[in-house]
Amino acid sequence: MDLVCVGDVMLDVHVASGALARGGDVHGRVAIRPGGTSANAAVWSAWAGASAAVIAAVGDDLAGALCVGAVADRGVDVGGVVRRSSPTGVMVVMTEDGERSMVADRGANAQLAAADVEGIDAEAVLVSGYLFLQEPGHDVAVAAIEGARTPLMAVEAASWPLLETFGVERFVEETATCDVMLANEREARVLTGTDGEGAARVLGERYRFAAVKRGGNGATLIAEGRLVRAGAEPIDEVEATGAGDAFDGVFLSSLARGRAPEEALARACHAGALVAGSHATWPEATGA
Image 1 (tube, one colour):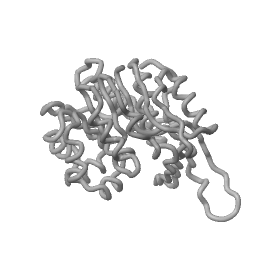
Image 2: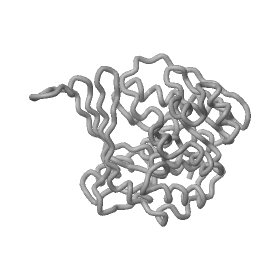
Image 3: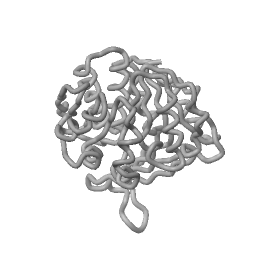
């Protein structure tokens, strides 16, 4: 297996600008689709031609069946997705005047157990920061990191508010054995106290690979001490939710399949741009 993604499969509800006015009935664009960091990254990894699997928990409900079925339809191995008594998790993304807010109900994702992550064996493993940074779930993330057989153990920073609450020193200490750190600019700033290339360099002193996703400025990577840059593709941004997950899945699976860091970074930025430039979180079809 090229990439195993550990953490979350859930339902995403996107409420577009114009639907958030107070009082009375309003009209706006509402999209409901399968999602979750782990599901998104795995689907994009499969799109890029890699073998991918996801380990997560969903409810024994219609939403869970729909999400798991949709992930499987994209060529992802869902044998590691377990059913739990809680409802399938839901993430509501609300956008108004360019500002994005999220409301998460982790649901069954919070019931993933250490036993569910035993025996992971892959070329690369991605542990969701949402699993790592929250209770319950943290101990499961640690078990996955400590127990997986992989040359590329990766964790993504997920959320700057969660990082601040969890504690930067604790986060760095508990991810010290990881090979890859993936963060956006705000998360990287919380972790390092600096921005852009400087943040990547600081993270690169702690991890073999440290990628800082910089949106319209592309991405910066420290690959085993070496600086690699990739520019952003010119797009008209529509909805950036999920772009970082696409980046993660393509980047890690590219490294896992032996591609050079420069190519892996460029392919990852391309995947992120495809998401940010559309209303879709997933690719239209398999095959990069």
